[in-house]
Amino acid sequence: MPLSNVRILHEDAAVLVVNKPTLLLSVPGRAEDNKDCLITRLQENGYPDALIVHRLDWETSGIILLARDADSHRELSRQFHDRETEKAYTALCWGQPELDSGSINLPLRYDPPTKPRHVVDHELGKHAMTFWRIVERCGDYCRVELTPITGRSHQLRVHMLSIGHPLLGDGLYAHPEALAAYERLCLHASMLSFTHPVSKERMRFECPAPF
Image 1 (spheres, rainbow, N blue to C red):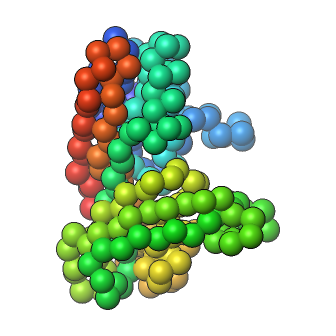
Image 2 (cartoon, rainbow, N blue to C red; image 1 turned 90 degrees about the vertical axis):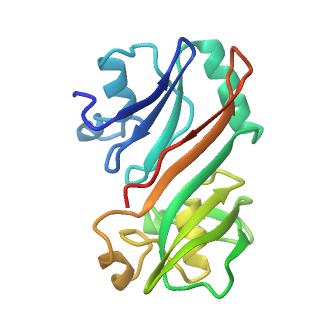
């Protein structure tokens, strides 16, 4: 598959920073028809050494960091594990929160009966924390900046749902009005900051949301 609308934001001998479009897997899925993905497209189109460091959901667009050798991959993976990276997401959420900012500290777990959904579970869930801030209020919805402190699956989507403000266009968690309000999931990884594994320079990349 061609790179198509995968945009290269930065490349050097150790790292690759790209803007992943919506409706593209980060890595191959288990099913035979889910082999097309970001890492495969990159490896087949000039970046055979690309190694995935972290992932975004199929419907989530935005910044993804990849390594280009084993040592860089090990160091960048450590930074994510030790929470030395900084991430911010832009989202459109249904409704108008009373406050302009806040934090959500609710444990999450995968819920097999409603696969692939995740749920809040105070007994069996894993610690998850998100900070949110209103950027703009727009009638029935608002534009928010979301900063995840942890990196649980579907964390931002479930956390915003838990306070009554599901993401627009979210086929898994939004109620009918919020789902119909936009033709795609309104979640975009808009900022990523990390320390370069070789130069040790602190690097920051921003990529505006397409919605």
